[in-house]
Length: 273
Image 1 (tube, helix red, strand yellow):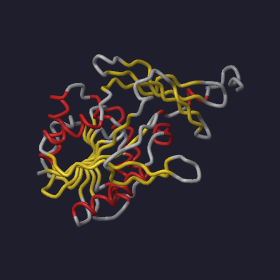
Image 2 (cartoon, one colour):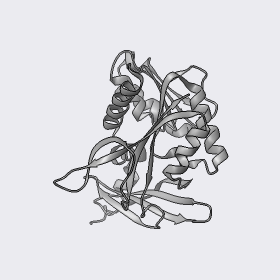
Image 3 (spheres, helix red, strand yellow):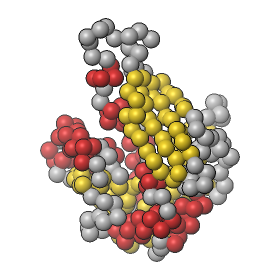
């Protein structure tokens, strides 16, 4: 890769880390497709009010309100800088009527607004930041208390035998390369440090654009804690396989048993008692 000319800002210096994250990490169209389908299957009706916990830029909430005039969204996050970026995105990408149906709040997900919601999302593993069973159970209990009687909690999870390894994975995203680094893992506590970096065609690099310290939770632990928090009908959705390529096909279906892959991502849903 060539270096940027001397005195000219590098591509890394000009990059917007939030825009890069949305492009490299999120697929909000597929995520909302999944949520809409399975909410209606589980509850027998369309959802109206969505709450996106750990919402970051509110990208998923934006997609939700685009889907129809009856959709409203609340996004909760503790990072005021990322919320400000998200509010500006709302002003730039949603029309005035849609903007009236979305709100991003500087708020702890354990003390959410009191208005009951149809569904709560906790995606991109952000809830892994709760490091103990007590803390995770408390969060799950607050979610259950927030849902209407036929509401649904959706969350994602990841694992596999590569999950606790200290490794780097790269993916070409066209205009840049996305790097996921599992920098440190402690098998005694289950805590790990992960980083996201980006590199660019001019040879520049945006190091530690995002950093995470969280516990590597297992599916049995998460299912047990959801049950302890008062949820029932806890379902795991596993990705199917494309027979031609042997890779995931992007379609997630309920399962009783998963595959012992090097790395997997799945969804869960849980309903309040």
